[in-house]
Image 1 (cartoon, helix red, strand yellow):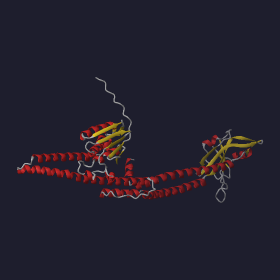
Image 2 (cartoon, one colour; image 1 turned 180 degrees about the vertical axis):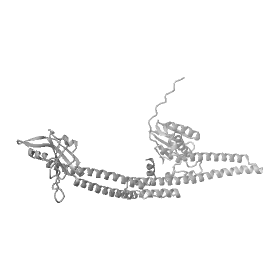
Image 3 (cartoon, rainbow, N blue to C red; image 1 turned 120 degrees about the horizontal axis):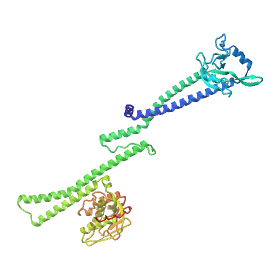
Image 4 (cartoon, rainbow, N blue to C red; image 1 turned 90 degrees about the vertical axis):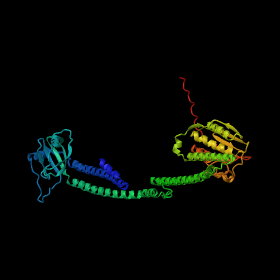
Length: 487
């Protein structure tokens, strides 16, 4: 059995579908054919039984019974032409099993024990059965208690029973012919179902063939631009699978394009600090090799530049690592955190970076689902952006109300034509190219906020400056921690 299962599973899906369809049709046809045969058999036997009941309506006179018993046993006679003059068997059955056959009967029906038990039965009930005559011909037999008329009153004769039978040759021939016809029809139906199943499987799996060819093409050529045509109004499983494949290849193509763009942009951004770092180190090395030391002021400036370039490289590498993290790595650390605590931690860092600025804060409690470190980093990037562009002695206003964080600075602001690009990777305003930074801060903010189900916008503020707005959906307040009892 297990070998057959393995062989079945190794077949192509078309062959399996054709076999399943053929098996289902074969089962249905077999069930219908067998049911039809039994129904026809029942109807035919009902008609035969009805004919027997009609032919067995008697009583007979006592004299006729005695005459027949007197000549018993007697062989039935045949007509000169050979066939019997009558197709109805009738005979008397004595208690000892002796058959008293009418001369017009076409033969003698074999008597069974059940027939003998009917002799003298007062209830008037008989038996109905299949049997054979002495020549082996099949017959339908009805045996009843013998009723005789004595003094004008029907009575049960105690010495014999009345047996009537009709041949079943025609009935059985009809049933055999019907069985043959049903068998032929069933065979043709199964073969037709198998062919139809194979045709339907081929037609139904044609989109799957296209999908398979597309997948093999992608695996062979890495061409993610291929698309499988799908009808817009089609909602079957194959259409859904094709749409899913098209969406998958489109997402992969977009991801690859973004990856290539990120690599190109990162290489471009890394080139500038690396070039500057290399130049400064070559100057320091040359001064050492030639024995002509640089003036202390120049040497100090070069070392300060090298340190600044290394800090910029470290920040850029950290930003790239943050952007390269997968969604699965982030999902393992997501929890319910206090938005207020994250903003307060970011404010402490921002005040250290802009000691000459006045940073005001009005914060209300709010809980969100996010990764704690990523959320704090996003708020730090927003505040750093405000600190960087604020004038010396300026003010940065921070407010957190109902899950909406606003950070307003009083700097030069962002031109209207540059607002659509502020959250793009490595994008930097032409007016800010001279300022430190990698152009990834706001991109990291947008990614973190979107992953937490929120949104972030940057817009001009009334009276000058820029307002950064971060909206995050709330989360259930976590239960307070129960302090452990002192040991």
